[in-house]
Every structure is written in C-alpha cells, then in structure tokens.
Image (cartoon, rainbow, N blue to C red; front, top):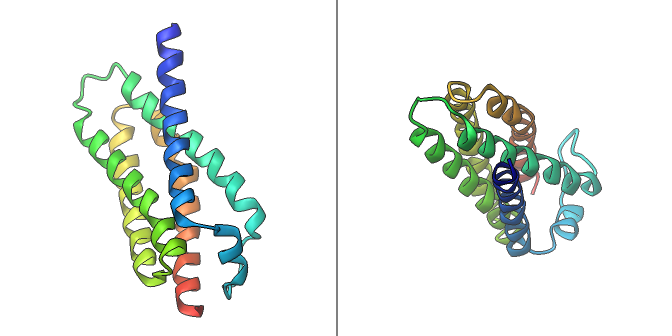
Length: 155
C-alpha cells in the first residue's frame, strides 16, 4: 500500500514539476498576458494558474491510474500518447509566452487537443478513472485553443 501512495505522489508531483518548469521557461506569463488584446470570454489571468495546478494534479492522477491498472491490455500506446500530450503541453507556454509565436503555439494547442482526445480513448480501455481525469483537461484545452487562436488573431 505505501508503494502505491508513493507512485501516486511521484506521478502528481512529477507532472506538477513539468508544468512549473514550463512556466519558468515561458517568462513572466501574468505580465505578458495582461498586455495582450484578449478575445471574448478570456479569463482573468489570476485564475489560470490555479486551474493549471488542479489540471496537472488530474493529469498526474490519470498517469498513476494507467500505471496501476491491472488491465492485461498493452499500455504502450497510452504511455506514448501521455508523453506526446505532456510534451505539447510543456512547449505551448514557452512558445506562446516565451517566444511570442502566437500562431505556432495555437497550432500546438490544436495538436494537444487531438492528443488528449486520443489519450482519453486509449485510457478508457485501461482505466475508466484515468479517462475521466482527462475530461476537465479536454474541456480546458478546447477553451484554451479558442483563446490561443483568438489571442494570435488579435495580437
């Protein structure tokens, strides 16, 4: 039982760290965001960080549930898809905020959205809980992709 707890902790903390490192390399995200012309329904910058903390915890939980699943089905594709979405997630803010490459980042966000959909589909066969953990992430990335393209267009 303690081993499972430490695996869970490692998955959540690992994903949270990856998100934090991405934010570090992206620069002063709140200041950059505050200066941008925003599309309709853009959130206040103050809540976005909190949303990501929660989402990263759910992403880490999903990884743990896939790892911990006793499902006999091969998990290789799940791990590949998880890695792809995590890399896309990692580079988005660096390219968008750090590099001001709004259009490139918008297409990365679109690819991230697609990878999340495929991840959910693959997770469902291994752990329903993992698939469910990705649903808020999917909803946020649909919204974030709209915002990304809106910000690219307006800036």
